[in-house]
Image (cartoon, rainbow, N blue to C red):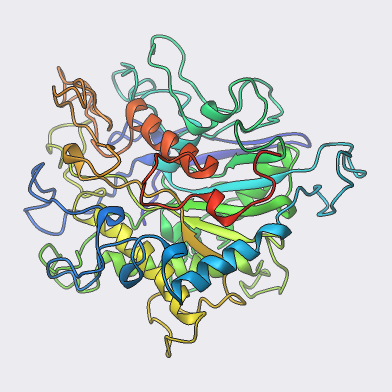
Length: 505
């Protein structure tokens, strides 16, 4: 985990916001970039497009694939759909179903008003918060970007329409007014159909779900898995300054406190959070599961490292805040949290190792190419199946990477929308990830930032973060997941499978 850009936190009685004030010579998007990039593990990485191909987990079977040693399906040996599986996977599904009656609109003080009534503490309507946490890709896909790459570039300002940076999201009820999503201004004419823009077209109701459900974007650029881990051994902000708090202290809860401030300044509270949607990654991967592309001296696959981070993170989501010494207070940060949904990476096969030419072109570095992007899905799969086994008394001792995940230690965890697809080859539901192909499936669009094709050494693209086109694809999958509108026969369950009674309320 490597952070290089400095942020300024402006705090008043009514508003707190975070803005990037640096522009690294190695990156066009401030806080997303790093001038201390890590070299790729071998000279082969990034692999040329088409070198790596795999069956998307959602299209897999219960048979092992290749020499991965893991089963290629969403739930490993339990297949792709828990509700049609036998125990123990069905038991896990049923536990999630049984949580539904307890998910109800709450006030900022955690109380539940009478149906049809506003909250007595602030006269505001109660809410069920869907809290989105994670890194830059998630931030762009949920809330859009307020400016494009190179719009504030160094040293040659040159906006690149349709290629958003991860910027702080206003969110619903933001004190500054206006839309709860970001949209770059002129000269960008490519509309960003981020998830928030899709569901709040008129600052209104979450279409198809109900007026009480609020989607809140707490993701932010450069906040990789270690930045959400609060443990002494692996938590980044245990050992590094928190740029979001006054004075920049070392604070393992750095990101969570940033989100708490943002919630409060938009009129919400942590007591209203009942579902968390999480997507991040282990940055600058150095070893793949098959041991084919590992840096010298590195033996632990990044998928297992990611699984460890995820285990630490979901346990923190369950309990608890920390005291000044970093010890648990026993006070839950999200006491009404019922469910956590994990999403892995989109396709990373277009990633490039930029030329080591003079600035602003970056030195060679390894952001998140294949096969590591695909293998992030294995990390999520392993964590969920570890919880399935543990909560059914099957796995003893517990998975050494995931750690203890029984329901007293962690919230009920399951898949959010599965995003990985085999590039231009696609997957069973027709989702493809495009890199400028002329085929009608892509129409020469790039789903990743492509920079300036005429001046690539000056205005380069990382071919990893989503463009406006890729953003729209992810936002649509999220919408289908939450509203239960996946096409007939789609292999993935949706949030409506967990019988949340307030859907359509």
